[in-house]
Length: 282
Image 1 (cartoon, helix red, strand yellow):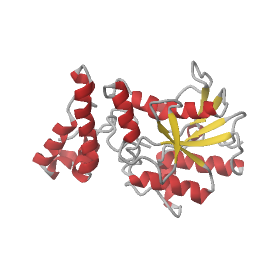
Image 2 (cartoon, helix red, strand yellow; image 1 turned 30 degrees about the horizontal axis):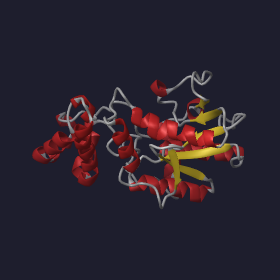
Image 3 (tube, one colour; image 1 turned 90 degrees about the vertical axis):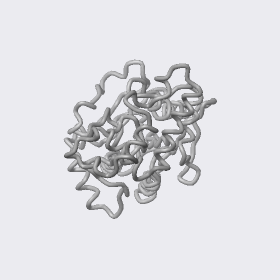
Image 4 (cartoon, one colour; image 1 turned 180 degrees about the horizontal axis):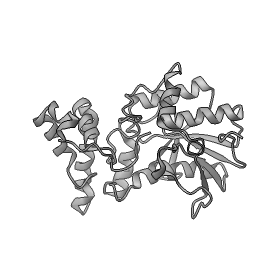
């Protein structure tokens, strides 16, 4: 039996806007001959996605004839709103709302941005449909074993997880091969199986090298993260609450990139850390 056959009951398909989760969606559609009404495909926009990601989400829905619900966080009830490719935030508005509400920044130890902007925003929408419990399909591959989650225990959550790519033995090579054979693709560079600029462009879980690249190649996008640290410094009672990373501020990183030049981007120099602080790409 295909690993992509839908389980019983209501199912959420978590679409991050990346190649891996889109591949998962494609295989689920193929195995089930489409999607019944008890399935919802959700994309939660933080406002810090690259324009190419938003275009890709729209193109996936159009080409594969699958309805994708675009959601954004709101600080006031019902704490979510439904948007579209045309109306989706493009300058971090949902993220900034959350920062102003919390009065400090998320970081590697307190990832409340993911919890509020992604997980709880989806949960609140699904509960508004009357869903009590459901299965959440997430795009964790077989070569990402450190990210694999227990599927048979929902704990305090309302959902069980379902990781069909892991069960099917799918690796990043399989995903890359699939997209090489399609008539369209996410128009962001695929570096060693990952889209470095996928999901939140300047996420604090991305490597120092990736964040430095953002500062060099997309200074306006880097500036938003610097602006949020400046905003948080006026809101937070603690200096640590005004930094996304304890090692440096975004202003300091941008200044370093400006002063040092392109030589720091040579991997052999070791000037920039190449390791992600967590999984935020996909």
